Length: 496
Image 1: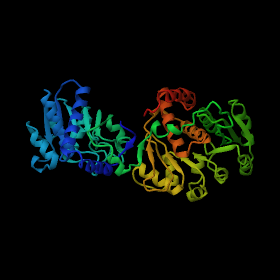
Image 2: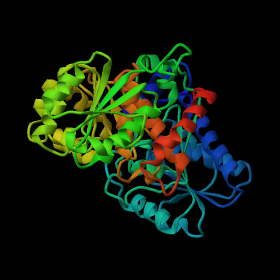
Image 3: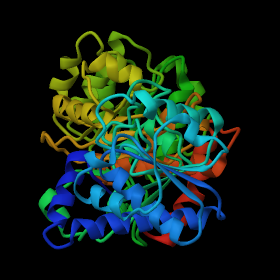
Image 4: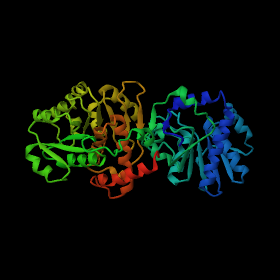
């Protein structure tokens, strides 16, 4: 990829229109077809190819690829959804340039297990597939045919990653070739699973068109936050690297302990657990580098937080859903200090989310999973739109966890900065991994990184650690894997 910018479907249409002022659109289509051809030839030996061409520009790209592959001696057949005389613009020009037969689209066209080029529909599709397009897509999937998708697998929406018409309504690609910049739907689930390997091809659209578009969505990666990453300086000491406080629960003590290890591995100079007196012995006999303070109630918690050296707070993991938890969260927010609210700290406000939102006045990060998110926010739409709206409503940075974690900044704008995180593995679906993530963000915030970049960096590093560990991962493995991930990041620099 050129950078981390993701373009919505409408933004990509605008990029194409702006590019036409300096680059003929026919040249852009030729370059797109050439990129498809190059990927096919790099990935597979010469074999029969079935090009499925749709009625729009995706079909035009397919016509170019068919022509170029045939010129190189590949056996190519092409089927069109619709009639050639109905094609318009550059697609019509390239249909005329194709001197092979144009067949009618049908599942029978896929007999013999050819390599399929899915050029039926692109990212702008807004309705479910039907007719021969749907039956062909089902044939591709049922027979496990090798498939290259043009732009995005047909049936996947480019903004939301939604499979229009349900799980069976989109092609499963081995590789997807898109152009200029990727789209959110390439990284949001479930569409991401359908894309296979993603190739973003340069087809000659000038980068300067982005200046007029001002895109606000990014794929998470170090180039977004590494310039401000709090690598320790030779003159740093434990007090200069922040003193984070974590509210500990009386029964589910493991949650706070995992968060502590996440915070400490991310470089927090000191981390204290505010422990209920009855759990003090449990916390005190754990990691010797963790400080533990017995706190009776929210008044005691406020007294602890009044220390100006304690500069960042996490409330929620393992606290239980109760009035006591609400009081602890509100006490944390009253300080105006950077605060992370996770797990039970969110669910405790399910009956009155506005009480939580009104209390947020300083830097704040909310880290819900989908269930916790739904308890606080009655929002619909694609994941990026929902998280942006949640950030506006709450006044906090919102990190909605999942295989396609989305983070939105709390700047109150309709197009607030948002990132999609694509690191990680399914092995993270186990107890305690979210507690480690909350602690990692806390550790970065305690060292002065703003809550949006702390959330972004923590998510990316959390996923990278999971990738390094692999199958068999448990939450306790993640903090131990972080030093290696951080060392690699420091040595290699800006790498997505």
